[in-house]
Amino acid sequence: VIDEKSNGVLGIGSDGEGGNISSDDLHTPTVTLRNNRKLNELLMTKRLSLPANVQIPSLALQKFSPSVDKPMSRRLRRASLGTYATVYKGRSKLTDNLVALKEIRLEHEEGAPCTAIREVSLLKDLKQANIVTLHDIVHTDKSLTLVFEYLDRDLKQYMDIYNNILSINNVRLFLFQLLRGISYCHKRRVLHRDLKPQNLLINDKGELKLADFGLARAKSVPTKTYSNEVVTLWYRPPDVLLGSTEYNASIDMWGIGCIFYEMASGRPLFPGSTVSDQLQLIFRTLSTPTEETWSNVTRLPGYKEHIRRFHEGESLRSIAPRLEQDGLDLLANLLEYNPEKRMVAHEAVHHSFFKTLGENVHKLPDTTSIFTLPGVALSKNPGSRS
Picture (tube, rainbow, N blue to C red):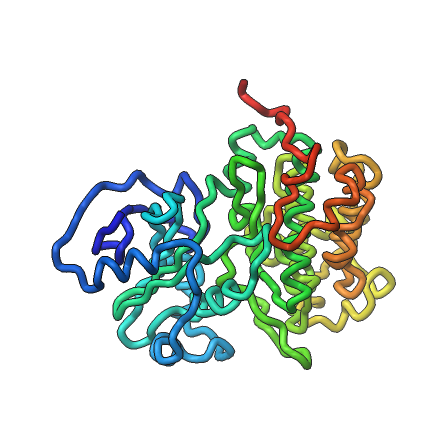
């Protein structure tokens, strides 16, 4: 359905999070047809057909934004928090499939936010069943619209529906898909850097897909220094909280551990309000790190500021009683203090916690869903209202 206001796609709505595309954030479209179209309707229809070739003309890239390797300005940093995009719900006239459209306003002086350029440049090369598909890009002088596949809700909304009590089988299926998607990214040296339930989208089949790559980064060789102002606070690893800027794929694995716990227990593991508060919650739960438990921790910039007293910590079994021993072992390996010892994604997907899924889940092509396998299906959640 064509509507000039949305650059060719009918629909209104705002997601408020700058790209967490879900049904609750998208409103029912109102039919409006405008006569003054800037783009030919036939061309627009062709560009919105799925799948389409995802390309940004080089001249457009030069015009839209400065280099993504440069530090973000204050204005662009605000944009990364979700103030620059509006999400629309649309439908392809060719396939009749729903799509989600992330419309990014282009500032006259600064062009597109660097987060948008990062998201496009990375997603156009990431083709995997557990990563949201970027179908197309529509660009005009005033906006850049990213056309994504549409999914029903995010993991946070899914958990809310079931009163935050999920079947352990469903926890296992969601965690496996999350690890499968991030393993694919890490093999291609892409760090997501903002894993949280709101950035994990789920459809009615139970397929989970990584979304919102606005803070993602292709890790270069040799190791560069990165910003430590990444990852939502509750899912940020302690090495980054303590000021480390030379991190690697381990930054995503800590967040996955926090998400794993949240799915299994129904509550966030470390819901801190400030960096200091976040670290104290981590230390009280996992014990205060020392040189014996985490080599070179005392050399991190924030160590003296934030290490004030020693905490003994708690056992994971006491805080995650629903998990059996293999689940607790996986959780412990994901929440390893030392980033050099933290479990990597490729190892995690082969952990014994997933043995009930069978060996065939490891033989699937990258673009094939695990739900194509016999016996792989969601269970009824204990928190179901019916």
